[in-house]
Length: 639
Image (cartoon, rainbow, N blue to C red):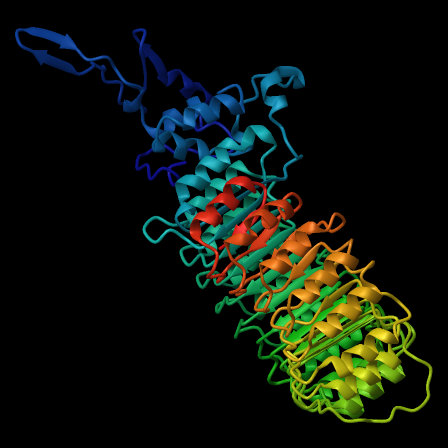
């Protein structure tokens, strides 16, 4: 206790029991009248006289105050309070009392309810079995608030989740604040510290010492935290299941090795931008938690092929694996990982900016991961059509394939993967792949890919009408289609896609397809209107004719975007006249021909609208918008 309150004296105070080494010393508390109790240590039994105040000719005695008691005496009083409600009320008196109360361990509190009887008020305040959650951000992240949380949540089962994001520039969270949490919230299960430069090893060690039920720890940009903290967490929190470390420059291999030894229930790890963490730490964690670790994310680390080899051999329980920006990992690492035959349960695999992803490496992953369902490749500069097609042939369980900024992939790789994929592929996404060129490939007569339900092609300049027409024949069961930012798409390519459908379209995004006209939209509304739920026509070359067709045929449409289109008040009126359409989201951003005349129509549509975007509609006045805001109170309006 003397350390807690910076008390300097010859008497020692110990947490967890009486502050007096000799039980007889409790007699040193003696009454001096009806108002004040004062404690004097050995050999200091001087008589106490309350201060005297002179007022004119009359001498007055000032009423004694409890504030004259030292912290140790107040501490003994507070820990004898009957329940959490009383302690919370006392904490509101002053910062001094709040600090004292927040430093009382739960096991130091005297239980005045003998026989296990719990007070009625305290029992009613218990919520969520210790899963109360608090988030402190920016200026609100202070030690005083943490102390108040520690005291205030004690009577309600204790704090279960705490997130501290950022820190107050003048009086931010420090080790003192975490000490209050550790003493008042032993039931803490989740702790997140983001950008907390003032929190160091001492604070996290306090958490490890007092919060033994901790299951999830998230440390992001905490430069003062070192391996010492992780050693304490490993020793004090054996139930740890989820660990995230990001931008912690002083955490290295030793901390990970300790967690691997002492935390047998660890299921998920995410480590990013920690220069001291190398192969030794990753290897020890993978080899120790080979039967429990299910999710792994490694980003911007100085690890080599050794780590990937260990993942491929020991990752027997891994279902989700993400590898991002690993400059020292080569083709050999991915090849060995795939041939390790340990990733039998891997279902989701994401790779970004890893030069080791080559044709040979990806083919090995396809062979070594028979249950892989989702693959996401981003910025894989050395992957070509050959590797993608080889992977598609071996990955028989694949359901979703995403390629982004893989510029060596061409039409041959795209259609080749569709032709050779298994019967389970449901979604294909192609984003920012500049190697795509619109070629008439003359696809052979093969069985169509009837499993594919969702196709997204975004910002691939070379994808045009020829590719789209071939795609329509190859994938007749598409329900969700996104063709965004494709200037090479026109009615000539889109119409064959519509007419070869065996299934009806549900969600269609054609934003940025500037060469699509009313003809395509009207035919789509006629053929697929009764199933359409979402339609995005932003920037398309359409007019009121498309809105008339939509109003007539699309009775289940709930989300419509006609931003930057040449629609007018007449088109909005056609939508409003429809008795069957019930839009929830309507976006008309940048529609300069829509004016105040559309207000009656928008008010009618507003009976079902939850969101309305009128940004950059220059012909709509502010007074008209005010009217909409007043009348459509349940609708979120952007202007």
